[in-house]
Image (cartoon, rainbow over all chains, first blue to last red; front, side, top):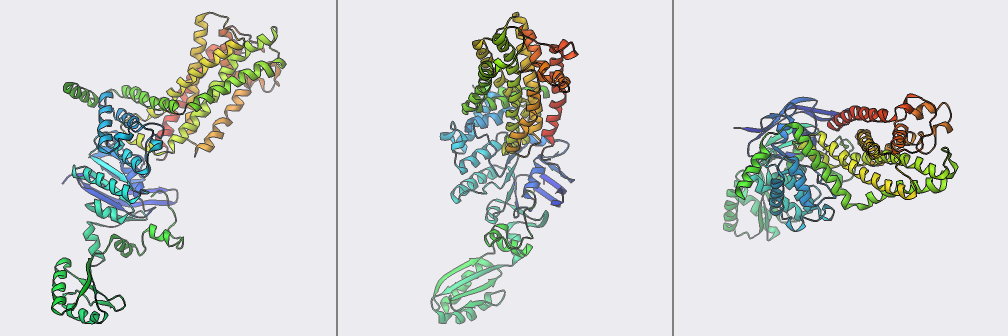
Length: 332
Length: 282
């Protein structure tokens, strides 16, 4: 296997605040690694070190086979970076921005113009190409920013919270664009605080918390750390609840939980989808009518909660500024 | 068409000397800043209006009270314009300080720094664009000067040397502004700090009043002040009144000293600024 990104023992402190506490990351060529964690967990610091914008206090890192400290120019010629905020010039048009970055990538005038047109088409920005960025919507700016990071046809793409602050529709749009890039074989390191996003886009996920890697694996592996699947059954009649629970107990990996009020039975199962078929058949044999049945897989929210003992920052903020033990610490 | 494409791609990917990249990168970046000026023409308008106001104020309001020797008001106007040109070049530095700070705190700086461009080009491009704007302002100001009675009394070559000197000084001094801008936390602070050092250099000089009218303890500073040297050198080259204090070194060799200052400023502040740019946020 070829590693597109390899980092080991990266540390970084801003004054007394430790942003990275010795992390290791490996990303195989052509795969997508999701770097998941709340604000201040060290995601952005990691990306900035790998993209040669920041120097680590200790540890080594290479991108595309080049050392980020001793061969920064070589690294820069194989990477693309899209940050949390659109890194484009407000006063220039979309086309002018892309041509500027193309020229700075040392494309000829002709190629820079051609590449700009290509990317504007691809990201659905042709109509707005010759308008100033000031008039662009948030989603359009992000798409232009992503286009700008693709000017040099990078082998390795860093996406630092590419959809933070976007409305759901623009987010879906960004996702499909990113999925296309991934399909073309670009190696991607994606940071996000949206568990759903990592789930959707990444092959492997590294969970960061307070500058440490606290877990890694595929989305499914992480979820199974939390516990298996559960089947949630809602029956038509409240009197059937306990009867149903007894009938299907044999398929469960643990005793069922019943709730008479909501007419719901929750059954932990080992083999998710096969269990559903058996359960439906069994309930039918017992003449119990089902109002609803669903397979519930644990979400990455559950994963985060079980790994760190606290939920992600978003939820925490919504709950009020309680705890205080996780203030803002350096850059995300 | 297809051959053109392959050829130009080959040319683009062929390794070019790094110095060549510095030039092409700088041109690309300065083009960005010039485009910006065309998008916000107000900035250029106010950059022009301020020195023109100064010319009018000093020529018609304060000038009568300042004595630069025989010739009265006409002599003062001839004395004034080279001074205003020096002042304009100084004030323009505040603009680049704010511009650099603003840029450095924005995401676009990350984009520049993640590109395989020459890092220094971000600054050379910015300073070159600022120079072009300065040249335009100097031209407009000279025309205003001619309108209020300023005259170029020496030959073409002396005048050309004077303008070349202004342009050189304008370029060199923007590097001081760039260097300061890279140390400022935000554009508000840059706006005040960027002007703070400019005031003493600009006004404790001979640009509006002869050195002889100032207290003796201040005179050495005023004489050696690069702004005074620049104004005095320009007056000599344009053939305008030069009321001298004595025959100190800066009064005897103002042109040579002005070019020496240009060289020193560039030699010191350009590398400092490039280093500050590279290490900012590291």
